[in-house]
Length: 489
Image 1 (cartoon, rainbow, N blue to C red):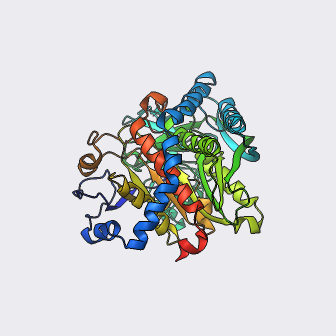
Image 2: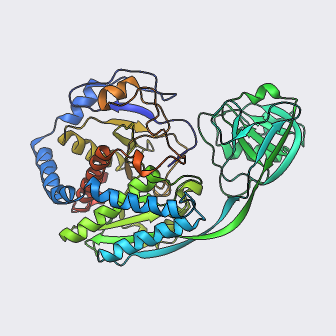
Image 3: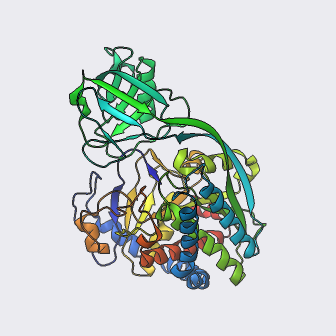
């Protein structure tokens, strides 16, 4: 999962017996719990109760069969793939190819005939260490979360620049660059726009490089059109160094890459409608990507295996997807949809995205896209109902508008989506700790996008709970007589 602009926002607490107190959420805006909203979620008509009980019965065998131990078999296999191939399963690596091979082989052993869909794109590849320094002053440290730490941002241009740094507030349109001196390096702080737009504006103004600072999160740019080196200083206020001479070297290149999505149909292969569920199979460079997103991939793989073992039948087609290059720029899922005939796209009733389901300092969250797409509230309600039925407290998070996930391409064509999530780089609040336990102030996943995102960090209890919730939601949607009509009602 990639979050480019801010942290998720908690919008509601749906615990059965307690309401969370408002507290600092590391930058997230947190609404006070709404008792009426809580009551509306918990109280159901007789018909609704009967429908929920029927859905729980229909998913019970699959939920019983899908266990954390079973999911862990796949997580350990992905860990072994990473260990044997440079400690990362990132796009463009042999480990990514080996991850695809594992998923395909495991599905075939379960009796499936998976489709391997090739995806071609241009990949920015690191050649060696990059450098950033102020002439006669600070030498910044690459990939170090210290005051002088920096990183080359995702999809930065390559090359070098030695020039005067000039502070620019936000950089959201050309007016911000009215007095910018061509050839300077733009020092850009956070603004109310896409970071790629700020870089394009800087390039148009003649900037020879861009250094972002005072941002709340990591930066990834759009995959094409950035020609200058772009870096992100984590903590230091480089805007105070405006007028100093900076030297920057982005030691990377761009290479063509062909990778693969893996797609398989389960349940009723010829169903009138399709209920899709997916996860991204790649990691970020330098990380095994076991929580992000080996957990989502492994849960779906175990769900597929147990559906086959149990002979599960559904009213609609269940289509499971392991997507390429989400961490690059949400490429695999977008390419998949682009390649589908219109009539096949029209069959997709919903898409469920499973990304990060075993965070060590976890929360139990239902993700709300907040895009006003018909059907998304109904999908979220399926998760609420399930967690309530198991007496599991949960919260609802609205992700930032520029959060990048494989749900994005589906949302772009108004296919309703849903997701559950156990948290990444934002710190656990006191309210969350009251609900879920854990350590206040520590990140939900302290190893997010790092080399320590390994199998030994996964919380097996929350992984099993979230895998069961995924199983239930998939079957609940796939067993509707007309999912598209039901979600629209």
